[in-house]
Length: 354
Image (cartoon, rainbow, N blue to C red; front, side, top):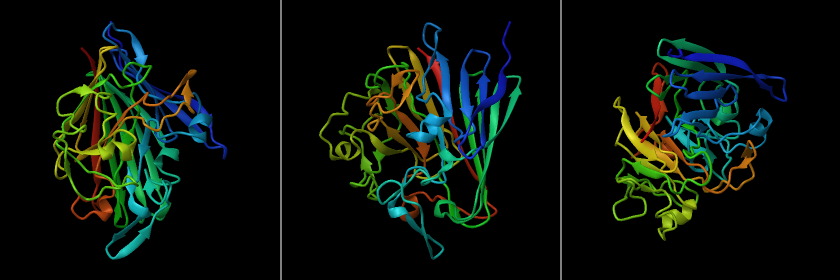
């Protein structure tokens, strides 16, 4: 008998200010399970079968709400208003300069000191005949972290019987603002050890090279004949110790790979990953014009889950997004959202084995 998809909500924890945080567990008919909490919209657990049918968690997370609040390198979180970096936390829009919160040296990173990863989202679980899901909603006030405009957001996670996690992001504003949302799960398809043997393909011919502060220079750099060429699948670790200056700046891979010249309605395959140890595969599809690949270079064992420390390069991220620092880079695709328009983007994770 086929198991129907299910979505169950339960209490997860309480913040210091007494705000309750809920957890929703999604299951599809094939045994894939996903936990998401209201705090940050964080995916705390994602269990998929390996090539022998054994379920295992493939995302990095924490053991408790207190752990996430104390120190979380964005594990599993919804990122916004602006994923990645904005130089010196400043940008101008329609002649007005805005100063954002700075939380990465002089720069603004992933929405600031109190980004969407640290806010409590309302959650409404749902099921259909072939999926389970949860709708997350949040309002960001005018001036939040320095951003103009009140922003109303809705993010929907849908786990389907086709073994995909379809994530839809929508937002509307009452003043001109900038928006660049993404999802920041760290993956390890083996469930343990480092990720250097994972075979990665990124469908990109250029990156946006960065300076010492990891801010794009504004140029595009061809990946051909460099350590950044993932157009054919190769082990993440094969070239990560190379001599390219960009690798030194990022302490490994922490770079924006260009997928297309502008945002459009075409869902494209940004990247695919295969872990030879488990046989698990992951495909990342998106509407976004770029994807940030991060090889877990700043994981240092200071966080853990179920007694297993998150050591150096034990997780990787593939974060579909617009280019970093777009509000200050006129040649990059725009991240401006105007009143009356609807921000919409889509990220799809597809799980499999081979």
